[in-house]
Length: 308
Image (cartoon, rainbow, N blue to C red):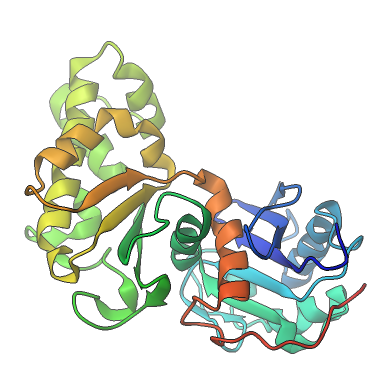
């Protein structure tokens, strides 16, 4: 890496794994991406050890860095660097991850920052993926739940016209239930079980869709629900592009046409994420260097580089 290049270390904290890579300013290119499952020893100290090992595997000890930024699920106090999650990673609840990690990395605590994972995903696609060049964008991550993020002019927004509280749509009322009841893996699995009487994982339903009409119908029903949510719940935001990511998006050919069929004619583009699982790591770089995240300062502090 050239001396003039600027790099930040990014982490993507998922439900079962953590990924890490260094990200370069300018084109937001990533170095080697490494990942590992959460530690068997379910303690905060073991988790910090895991992050430290991943940072070394990603090459963070070989080049000077400006800092580190973690894409994390919520609820999480991004300002304090403290998890408020109790339903997952409970051993991190109330733990001061910022100071613990900064000590291991040899960085000032102010150089360890945090970013909501759905926001990181959308920022990655804005910086180097399917959302480049659009003024008003929404990112939806489709999986066991539905994550959402909103951006205007390339910056994450959590309030304003058409933006629900904290930018989250999963729990918004929809059709007598919530959005997540209709746009999630359980919606697909439920539709398939109703038509066949069989309980199957969504990945198996996707494989079966090549020759199983009921499996295809379950995905098409999901697509129609997704399109209706976009047409109604998300309409007021007036997005130019909506980018779909997450595990279900890998089977876009099974539901995308059905979703588009529910949308009115207009300029809205419905796109599949280009960066896939790399998006949050790229988004960490975008948030750091471009100051696009509401949760971190608009102008990251500048104090040279940090060596191990």
